[in-house]
Image (tube, rainbow, N blue to C red):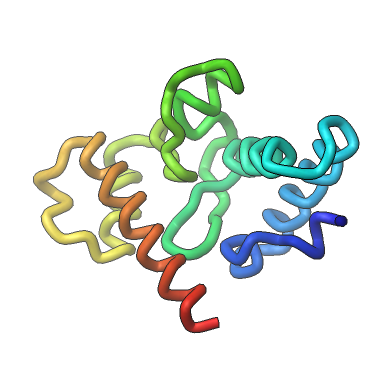
Length: 133
């Protein structure tokens, strides 16, 4: 099935370029690996080099590149994914994202704590949007 027909809901709420990037990477991965989870993971890996997840959608990053140790290390790394949060961004950037997501106590958090709280906020917002339909 073409990627445009199975676009994840978070991408449906994102700009057209993010949708096209994911779709092209997904379709290419399907040709290479077949339909399924690996094609989806490959498409998200490509997306995370240019975009980061903010709440219920994806936004373009200031600088292209891997978003976390998992993205930098590839398929064979044991590093966890940060679920679209740009863990390689500065703490100031993460504080800005946390402020936009209305995360309380953010100014006292370490960078790792900010990443974890942003992931939680992203999950909450995505779940709320999916529930609304």
